[in-house]
Image (cartoon, rainbow over all chains, first blue to last red; front, side):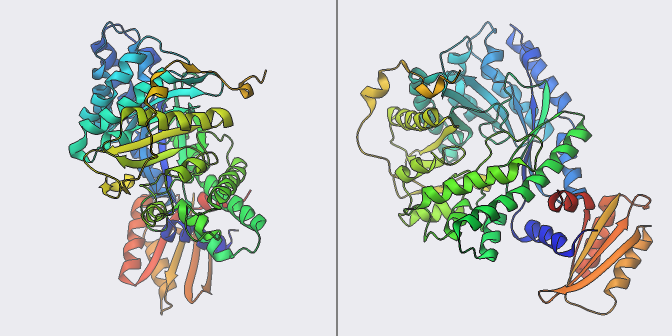
Length: 452
Length: 89
């Protein structure tokens, strides 16, 4: 028989502590849509996505109703478009972005990811054209997300791609300047990108994946914070244990949803990504978990250690709860999407250097950072190179999603609304990295890549 | 399948009767009931067999939601699997 306290605990988590499944993401391979004629390829892509995902949103809603678990987003990820575009007899590949956007609109999903290229070691056919088309693609579409992998532990860092991405980020912000530079919030630059990530904006369907797969991203920073608050732990090992137990419960819920979605859609279950993904809602903050551990404010000394413990305990708790764990799995630290992070920046406790240190131990990287609008493409490239280096050396995923706030300077604010939140414009380091960035070439893979 | 119906709120006369009547109206068979007072709250938990109800799960849930609103109670109807998966290994 079910225990009363367990039932009430679950209901309390959902009602008061923002427990939810953040996303059900259907990964769809577009390999069989490749066609030298771009119009024919776009038609095939649109048809395949609409055919495979026609019941995705409805299934998500059905599960929400039946189980009482809020499923916030239903999304789609596809094979990196650069691969599909490689055979097209044109460099003008914007049509792919429009086809993806149209499919997302038809299906009612809020984001579709995979306007992507994997160029960690070099550029293949389609890669240049894709990266160069990113600013316009993100400006003319509403739901398309783009990501580019520019480095890996195995391959090193492609500095030519890093240089291109700095420019792409700034140009994207400029092209969407009249809409809060929102385009840049849909663009991620990765090192060690994972192929089964269900979270946007960095989701794409890797080439090693099956034809179609269901990946689920759970969330629940509010639940972890509330558990810590109630327990009033006196020892840091107790904190780690409590986070593990809570992560276990959250992930079990994600696993249940993933299994149900996979069964109902007759699509294989891929992975559960057990990430703590904050939202701007009060009480749904990763920063507040760190503060609950005893830090006066997120960003003060001790933050990196607390985050390392959190990130590790989340993984340990979640890994037993799901048959397949994947994606990014850990704690996200997106600034504009996290009430506590925004507060820490406004109080002067959290700056870009501390965030960079935190990305060495969190699950992703510099995420949803609003930076001054007059930033040079070279500086953005250098930020990307720094993050990629942390990822490459530590054999972990790192990413950069910064938003140059065109026309604004440090201390101003940019408001995106919705899940993306709002962010204070943060000051960058002094000095010009232009000559370094423009050297180009490839940073060699580190010694730890030689594991064989 | 079984649904877990939880009723939370201030104690008052006839809560059990109102909820069980609503269940009976749609053919949901209550197989277990527990109730307790937890943190000054009245908490009742029912396990109901809902395979043969005359309305879909969704409507049962809405009906009880409405009943809850009218009586100043919070009523949730959820699939039992969510509790089993979260709290049992």
